[in-house]
Image: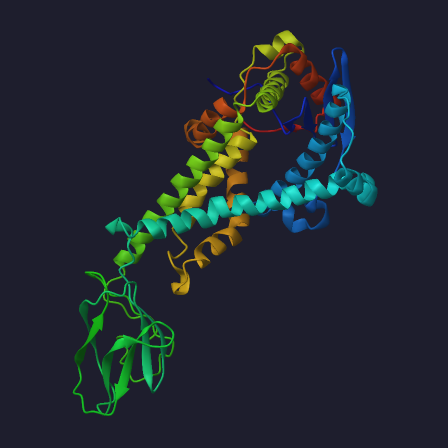
Length: 429
């Protein structure tokens, strides 16, 4: 279904508990259904990062700032809707336990904020583990069973006048000859049959005569086709063949990086969709997704320049290209591409890869934000391809709303539409 409209607005929103938050260019408003004929309305605001630093108004930088601002605004709006929904439910309170009474006496009105803050920190930590560390770990574990995932590499970490230390991926003995050249004929490299105190095999240097060039027998546990060697001290007694970053073949590292990026990306997408599919089966989340559909339909009705009535809104599509779901899907897909630029095991330490990818989140957000804006401003073959995965995902995160939900969405958008038309995005659609 085409999402081309007569005009495009910068107004956006999010679904809440029995309500909707609409965000316009001048203010944001939360509307919550508190009764059959009652809708509670309140303006909410947060200080924007772009107002504090001009750099966050620039392309790519504004994406990360926008994500942070949206999360803060959504969190504040969600807490407000939760409070109003609980009040409207008029649930009979049970006698609090001694522990609950102590918590209420100790923290008072701050208790809910503390609990929600703790839950937020725990949620972020869990998300980082599930979406960054777990996929990387599972890939490394699966490399024991899938040959294409293996790291056909031998890393040299330390080298000085006394010895050269090499780390291997397996303890089983198998020899591979690595060509080298000795620049000092008075010293020769010898492979020791036992590991040192650090659990690494060592290559020692003796004073025996050795003609150059030569080979060295390296013991490892796999049938290596490629050997990859790094030296920490380039000015040792090894020729330029090994200096800094010598290698016999680096194609395997690039291929493994590709496999790891795809593996991590597919697993993260599976986790994301698996989670929203599971939560969508609960009664409360079904209603949130219905409000989500009401939000999209109402914005489309406004962009099609139709009167904001329940009948007109109901006819609109619930799939919108400028949606948070679409943004998340684009972020997941971009993560696969960005992962191609992060080594599979940076500096030989596997845990550094997810850490580096976490540090690259601002870049991912920046690119994703610009793509979402592009899809929202233009309707052509390219933008339809970019928006397609997100629009498909909205079949899960948006549901057809009830009329009373549409009424909430209409009141919310009417509250944030500016009189001067400053919300309208000028573009050729």
